[in-house]
Length: 113
Image (cartoon, rainbow, N blue to C red; front, side, top):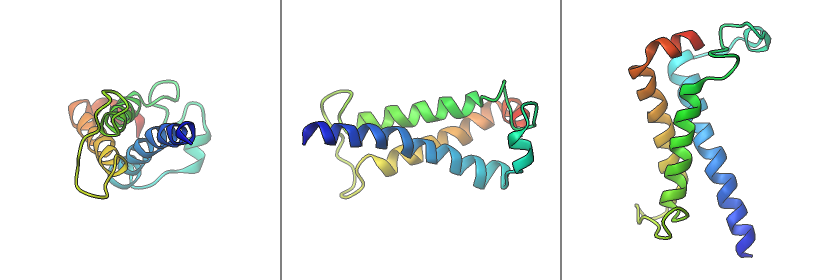
């Protein structure tokens, strides 16, 4: 059962921050995606050969936040508000990090939009 719990924590640590980055990108920065542009290899959404490095960086921060809060990095979990766990804080970290990185390096996000 412990191995299954570790697997579920790993899945959560990957996908929850990813959703935070996607939500920030879709709802705040772009406000819409154009399917034809997403499918073109030279489309305007391809920041650097199809990789948005600001998004990858924000996602990585969210993963680290998730694992840290869950106690998988240090062995000591952080006690947040009851019932929050690591999912909501890591989603918020990835969301805010993506927006903040967009403020710091706006040209990189403009290249991606």
